Amino acid sequence: MKNIYLFILIICMFGGLSACHDLDPKVFDRIGSGNYPQTAEDVKTMVTGVYGIFNEGGYSGFGDISWQSRWVLNTATTDEFVCFWGGSVWDTYRNFQWISSSEHVTAPKTYDKPVKTITNSINTMELMKPVIMNEELKERYMAELKGIIALYSYYLYSFYGPVPLVLDPEITMNPNTDFIPERPTKEWMINHIKKYAREAADVLPLKYDKRDYGRITKGTALMVLLKLAMHEKDWQGAVGVSKEIMDLEIYNLQNNYLSIFSVANEMNSEIIWAVPCVVSSDNRHNNWLAHVLPSIYEEPNGIAVQKWGGYKVPWKMYDKFWDKVGEPGAPNNDQRLQSLWGSVHIGNGNYMNLRESNETWAQMGAVPYKYPADPGSTGEAHGNDWVVFRYADVLLLRAEALNQLTPLSTEAINLINEIRDRANTTLISASDFSSGDELNAFILDERFRELFMEGHRREDMIRHGTYLEEAKTRGANYFDQSRLIFPLPQWVIDQSAGKVSQNTGY
Image (cartoon, rainbow, N blue to C red; front, top):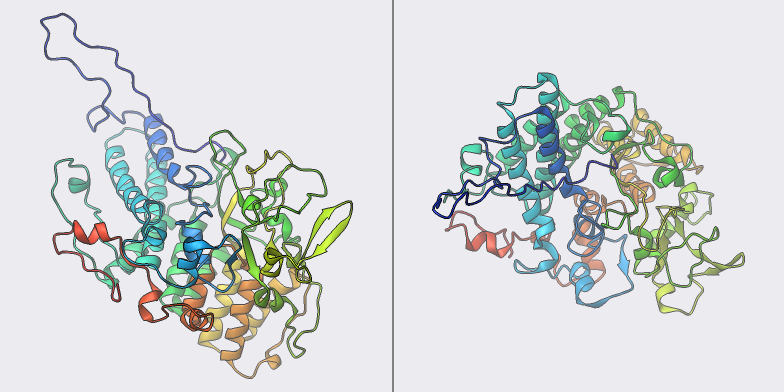
């Protein structure tokens, strides 16, 4: 959906003072329930406008990979990330030093904007109710908004635990309200996410035409339910939801790993949900390569790319591609290494082996290329759609849940092998593992190999119980249970009149 970005409604003043003695002017620049929306087109514009939060620019949308972003919180705090730029920003993440007043984890784009988007979605649903239009289309729009509410509610829950939300339109649409919400229980938050995600999934279509690509689909809503089930270690629930996704029969693994993320293969059948990106002057682009490519790199096909060389994958993680079952350290031809480079092209067919270099930046780790250069790029800006959910994630999550229920199950092994077969690497068998726990550890590593730097690692490590231990091993300042979630922004506590308590440990 290259064209569903935020619609900005510009309402001009057509009237004013009709005469010098008319001191009661008519205001035409205000949108309210009495005059908007009135038509199906108005409703479409309003719903489309809510999607603007997902791509507000290279440094503000759902695919933003700069500090304070959803992606950084899920990645820079884990073992798969190191930043050459260094400094207090990245040290805060690496050392778990965040506090309730820290911009690093309580910024508007990680807390305030999602909460406001949830409120905006509630208000939009209320405003569209009386509009006379095709009821089936109205129901679909309602389901899209419910899907957005579920998606953002899940990420808020994952980052902060239960958060105070207002879902009553009588309150959210009252500009004079002094209502202050209390912090809900964990059970309420879980049920809230389930309710909105399920109601969305039961109505939403499997896919849209090209013009509307990027809207919330049935698969997107089911992914929220799957992620929530895994977060809560509801293995049976995860098995059920993953089966629902598979039974949709519209998702498939791509033959070529690198092509999943390329401009030429956008909207492919492995992608469950992506944020559309375009090379444009208003920054609705993908700026991945600028963050990961070293300045010494030369694109072989001559495409213009910006290169700041900040983000790396530590060598200890890169080496996981060479850990063959039964033969530690044995090399393989894993196709996924096309996206994670130990050597970079420096021009005229010559390559620089980063690990053997004396350069500090090169010694830090491998380059996660991931999104192939867009031939239509203009330096930093590339048009590759930002992949959020894809089918390979579903298969691995299902394998993990099945292994928890029935250790070393045949289906779990087969699902993992689907992923490894596509990658052209060694297949596994149940006999390679002495227990379900050993296979579970292998699945965590396989999730890194398949999904590295896609924004899933923090959740995976927390679920597997390795997040805090790894932080301790690398010398983080804090590694107690409080660091499993981030602190609520201090202003939320200050403005709550005592109704909202801070997370333990902050």
